[in-house]
Length: 188
Image 1 (cartoon, rainbow, N blue to C red):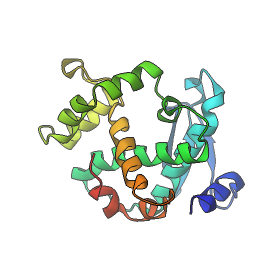
Image 2 (image 1 turned 30 degrees about the horizontal axis):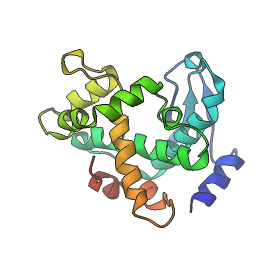
Image 3 (image 1 turned 180 degrees about the horizontal axis):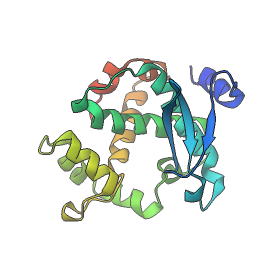
């Protein structure tokens, strides 16, 4: 199934996707006139060699947006983290020659920190101690009191999706891209 998505990724038929360029985070998907569009913030790029990875990552989010529907507020954080994991694993399948830090859009020292502090990440993000809103805030800004850098939860999402895909014979994203209940059932 990855081949079908990769073919669409490379074809990028205009009838299926619009691309907007403006100042923003590295990349994201937003709704425009009722349809998802991929957006990039070019001012954030120091090195355009990763643009293709970011494009593949955002393309996975684009596909998720076609099927996601409403996400309950109490599940928004899990949706965010798992969807980041899907985007990371998808770009890794499309461009396997790049380092994991490239796919996560992390500097190598941040990836090392996440790997060394996986138990701390799980303690914070999986303990139930914090509300979904607090977790979203931690992920966006980090939290110096908890020794937590921004966007570190993305690493847990990557691990959850990688573990799920590892149980299959070959990477098949179709069920992850179409079944939000499956997304909510994955363990961080």
